[in-house]
Length: 184
Image 1 (cartoon, rainbow, N blue to C red):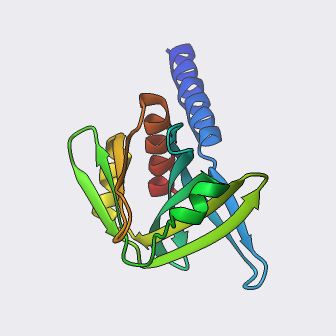
Image 2 (cartoon, helix red, strand yellow):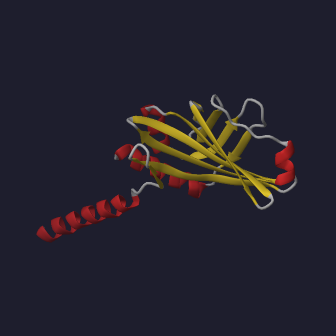
Image 3 (cartoon, rainbow, N blue to C red):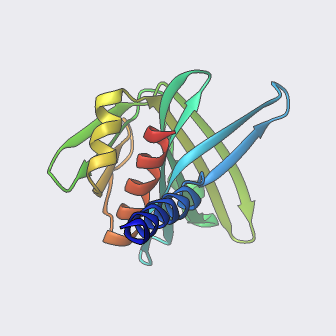
């Protein structure tokens, strides 16, 4: 009886330690000016390439606690060849809608309260890095903690809609990250 109890206790403790090791933020950001550290929980949704138009777009989704406010982030790296960038201007301003769809067919929609754009040139490519952020409520967090993201969509006002599928592995990874965020 004592051996069974001891074995069960060790099993519970070891599973707790293993789970605790998995709960590590995907990204950590330091704001040197404010002297604050922020943890981003989430990861990569997808990378889409279009050889015909010469673009590559990477989508990441994160949740974070920014100054006591739960925030959802959609980060988009939009890479274009230099000639395309001079003709096709990409802009994702404040007010841009971004959405995720879960495996239970629930769509969670956000309207960007903030939008940051960093533009860089690298060889013959122009990189636009967009960070869209909006407040996320507890109900939306619970939905993401209990379900897996299977699709995403970004709906700019004056640019084509960006939509894509999320494969099981990255969707599950983000799901686990949100669970960790909710439980911390």
